[in-house]
Each structure stands twice: as C-alpha cells, then as structure tokens.
Length: 239
Image 1 (cartoon, helix red, strand yellow):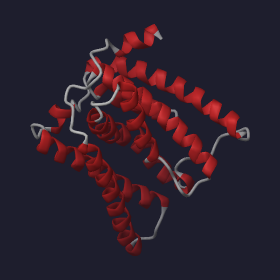
Image 2: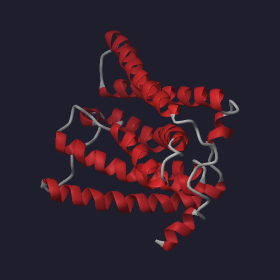
Image 3: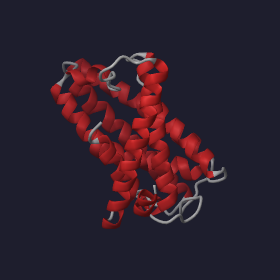
C-alpha cells in the first residue's frame, strides 16, 4: 500500500484544483441522456441505409456519445471556468503522470479482482469467464477491434473528463468518501447493458464501481486527470 500511494503521489487535500457547482451534476446527467438518444437516432438512420452490424453500431454510437461528453465539459468550462477545457480540468497527460498512472492501475486491478471474486461467490456464479458487458457486439472481429480502441483510448480520455473532471469536483461540498461513492455509482450505472443477464450486470456494476472509486481517489490525491487517464487505459487493456 505504501508503494502504491508513493507512486500516486502526496495527498494535496480533499478537493480537485477547480470545484464546480453541484448543479453541474445535473448538466452531466442530462447531457449523457441526450448523447445516448442522439447516438440511437443517428444509428437508426445509418442502419436504414447500410447493413446493420456490431461494427457499425460501435463505430457510430460510441463516438457520438464521447463527443457529447466533450460538449458537456466545454459547456461547463465556458460557463463556470475560463473556457479552456484542458486548463480548467487539467485534461492532459505528461511524463510526470506515468508512474502515478501505473500505480493507480495496479491498485484498481487488485481491488476490482477482489470485489469481483466476492460478488461471484455471493451470487454463485458458474466457473469460467463471465458474459461480456458488450453483449452481442463482441460477436464480430471488427467490432472487437473497435471496442479495444474505445477501451484503451476513448474511454480513458472522455470518461475521465466527465466523471473525474466534472462530476467528482461538483461534489466538493461532500466528504471525500461520499463524493467518491456518488461519482463512482454514476460511472458504474453508465456501464449497465440491458441486453445481458441481470447477474452479469451486477458483476459489471460491482467491478466498475470499485474501479471508479480507485480512479476517483487518485484524482483527488493528484488533482489532475493525467494519472487516472493512464490508469484507466492500462486497466482496460487486459480486460
């Protein structure tokens, strides 16, 4: 534990550099819902022209949702900050973020594995790999490659921007543990998939909640997004 915390860095305080007003959480939730709706509408139009496929679904819907996350961040930055998303949210990766990111990734993998094992035992999961959170999308090799790119590059960049860059700082008026729990619960809820089984969703939520908690802790500790972006990418690489 001492090695991990030493890698992540010193504790600067309970809140990130810029604290957003609590109403930003509502902006994030509404923006996320609108992004999902827009992605579904656009995919419907595209699928009516081209043959529907898992790769097409991934290639159309996920970029729209990630662009929506950026639009949310830009709106918040312009209204409550300087208008510079990178500067206001410290949305960058430098060489100083590498070792803290690696340490956070190791901790996240250990915690997620422990939580996953506990949930499997409680729910009596059968032996073997669990159902993928992406459901039928992994049936296509092209879709699997796209999902790998999304998991390693897209998710760390845009999900960290939203959940650790906006939601977590908007909870600055709460105790750190409460802020971590709420932001991680919202993060986990976005990974639910109605097309897979209920028990699989429970396992996904437990894993993403625990991972989100570690990432939120690291974001509070370092007051920047670089380390958690690296950690998120490394965490998703073997998963």
